[in-house]
Length: 324
Image (tube, rainbow, N blue to C red; front, side, top):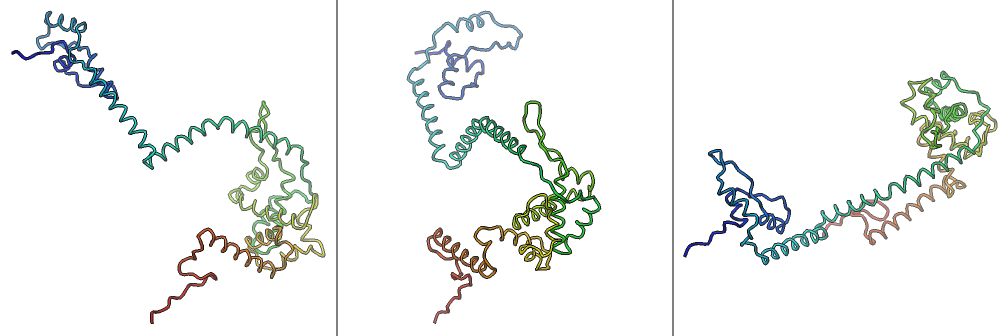
C-alpha cells in the first residue's frame, strides 16, 4: 500500500518552501498560521518556473487541508489559556513581579492625578500670591546698608554674638529696600520673583553670593530675636543692642561670650518653644530629662519591652557576670 502524501497540506508547503517562522505569540496563532500558509515564489536554480508546479501551487490554495485537526486546535487554545493563567498567578505569587505591578499601578495613578494636582496647586499659589499682595511692605528706620558696611559685618561676624546679630539685622533691614515682588505673565500666573537680597548681592557683593544660604541663616537669627522680644516695625534689630537697659532676652543671649551660631540659634529656639519659654535653666534641664524618659518608654513600647543589647535603662553598659 502506497504511503499517503499530503501534497496540498500546509505541512507540505512548509516542508518544500522552507516556512519555519510565525509572528504569532501563541500556540493557537502559530497553528493557524501554519494552516493558512501560502508559499512564496522562489526562483528555480535554472532561472525559470515550471508551469505545472506553478499551476499546482496556485490551485493548492483552493484545496482543503487534510491535516487540519480541530481537536489539536482546541488543545493549543487550552495551552495558551494555561500559560496566560500561570503568568497572571505568578504576578501575585512572585514578590518582585508583585512589587513591579504595584509600582506600575502607582505610576498610572500619578499620571491620572497629575492634571488635577497642578490645577489645584496653581489655584493655591494664586490665592497665596493674592494674600501676599494684600500685606503691607516692611518698613524700618535703619538706613540702606552699603556694600562696605555689609562686607565689614560679614568679616566680623565671628568676633562676638553681638556682631552675629548685627549682621542678621542688617540683612533684615536690607530686605526693606530691595525688590522681591512676584512676577506675573499676561494670564495672571506667577512665573517668578524679583531678585531681592540675592539680586542685590550679585550686583553689589558678588564675593558673598556663594554664602547666600549662610547669610539667610543669620537673617533668620535676627527674626527669631525680634519674635522673642516682640519687636515691631519700623524698629530695627540693631536698636535692641544699642538701647539701655537691654531686653532680658537680649541680655541673656549676650551673657555668654562664645560666638557659636548653633548655640545662639538653639537658645532663641528654646525661648520660642511654648513648653520651655517660661522655665529656668534647671527646669529646662529637668524637662529634657523627662522628655528623655518619655522617649525611652515609648521606645520600649515599640520594641515590645526589650532593652537594647548590652545596655541598662540608664544608658550605661551592662556588665557580664563571670560564672562561679
